[in-house]
Length: 423
Image (tube, rainbow, N blue to C red; front, side, top):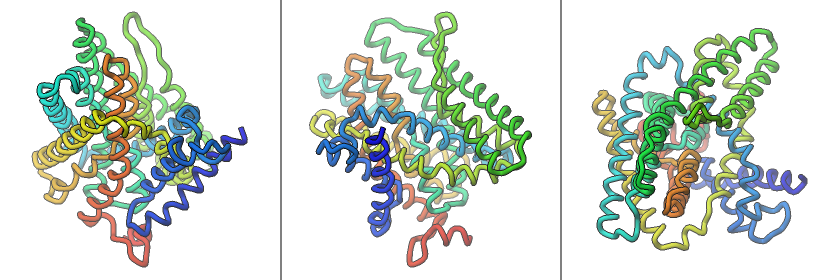
């Protein structure tokens, strides 16, 4: 126990101290947390084997998954705050169109490029692997985006649209992955499962939204018994923890395997709660402050979990570079075209796709599922390599795009945070 506590303390303090360095380089704080994780991970300081000084193995990092899952639940819960009816009336339709089209476009472009790679070098990548990677490419990491927005107090049309699109992207990505993975499994095994391809993905989304709606309504009704701000915030924290726990359940209804998406459940909980509770906005602000240390640990642990051994395989590097190029192109073209279709301004068209590049936990979860395919190891390693690149570069690109449209101020002698609070 004492070793874990010392590791977590080192992770938090190390991440915070490294932000002083990234600040000098005009990089977001989330980049510092990820780099701190890499340094403290089992491939750097952790490899020294000193108890409490870094994470000695990937198994040790994975044993702290309860913290990362909890942090992801709180992140999703606060993203639900963006789905207020007043905002949906003005931006809901464009966000839905963009969220769907950019995800589908990314999947199609990555599929075409990787299938082309298979036709050129069949021994390098299989069709099932290409299809699975195409679906995984649609996923965008909401956590990194939210941290950049919070750090710089970004606000404006692009920021508000981005938060909605990122949330919708997860639901679309889940469906695309389920269908693509079902087809890939059928190609590998020689038999098609209609349940896996068509039924189970829809069931998972419906169950997730249903559970989230119930939890959001229950949270509101339960909070009516309390008037103290601290007690209401504590109750909200307790409900999010309960929701995260329930979202990990799996069961079967006849031949159908049922489960929940943690992100969708917690986002729906936040959405329902924010739309029916009059004091939700104040509570959300208080919860954000309470969860900041948890979010720091989330990113440090995410950095420590990145397996640097994938860099030793040239095939992984080659396929990974092609995947990154194709995914980046798909996100940019998909967002640019769909933003144009919904008549967004030129600055939004030119910058939205760049802000959708970060990729992390959701993609890694999909890759873990895809590991059951015959060449699932390649799928997992390519995603690990891509996440390593996207997590280190993506937050900085998001900041750059928000700077370009004037929704955060450049940092000078006065911090960007203070300048944006004065706006």
